[in-house]
Image (cartoon, helix red, strand yellow):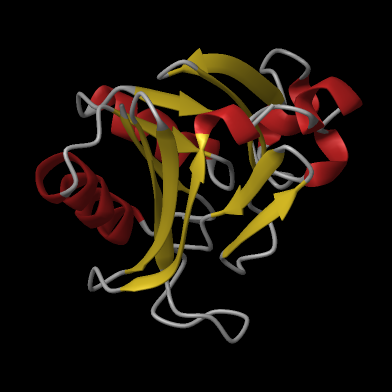
Amino acid sequence: MIIGVISDTHGNRRMMHEVADYLKVRHRAELIIHVGDDYADAAELAMAGHDVRMVPGLWCPEYGSGRVPRRIVETLGGITVSAAHAAKDLRAVELSASIVLTGHTHVAAIERIGPSLHVNPGHLKSRFDRGQRPSYAIIETNDDTVSVRIHELAGDVRQHITVNRSELA
């Protein structure tokens, strides 16, 4: 299974749609997970026909409404994936998922913490924000491994890790 992960679009819907098209066409992503800021952006992706999972960011009205979950947990491609905009919204059980997705910082990162991969795809807010260029993540699972890559907007790989599925939670 191939999953695209984006975050912190902050109303830059042009860049968000550009990356969503990359994910679908270039990377053959079957699903996009939008980890917040801005929930309305993610909803627009769903209305455009993309299969999207989404959580609200801290600045979204949906975050404080109580009607929209701040975190999601799903089994995708045989692995457990949890997502929230900010790590503070994840409980211990979500932090022990095979893959933990967060946004908020605008800084792309892949970190191995125990039996979990923690992934922040970075941001799609602008051409440069908080000292960072825009980026997104690709998660690819197969029978033996899980691979996570952070891509620059142009497609170049910024960071990459592949682990055996047996090593993940």
